[in-house]
Amino acid sequence: MDEKTVEESMQLILHSGNGRSMAIEAIKNMVKDGDTEKARKQIEEAGKEIGEAHDIQTSMITAECDGHPVEKNILLIHAQDHFMTALAVRDMANLMVDMYESLHKAEKK
Image 1 (cartoon, one colour):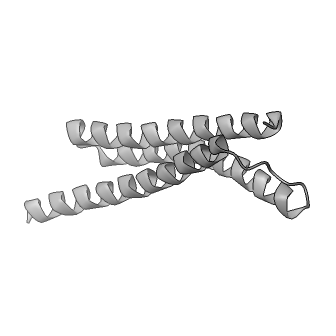
Image 2 (cartoon, one colour):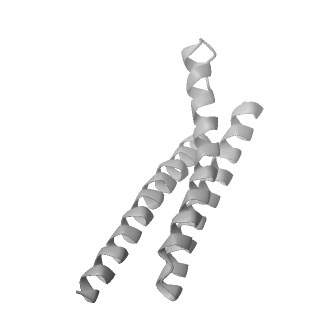
Image 3 (spheres, one colour):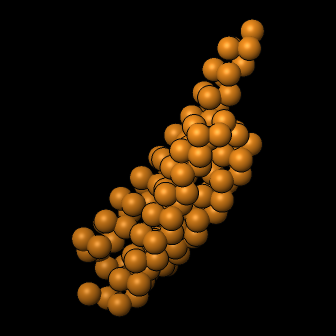
């Protein structure tokens, strides 16, 4: 297995996993304390981790497009799964904060 692809795949998993976990933690904290502003900030921080993963993915895609083939293996596929899941969780976390705020506004009426 190509050592560079293994390293990039592991970094992709690391940053994606960190971002996903941070987004989930933001929602857990919001449910406990009701602080949507804090949740949004935490989700923004999660987005920075996911952004790191995106940069790695973009680098790999760019290399491929520039004629430098990237070895496809199960680890890279697994890393891509982590990345896509992190994106989905972050997006859902943002929607959950929106929903939480909407429900609380409706309760106050």
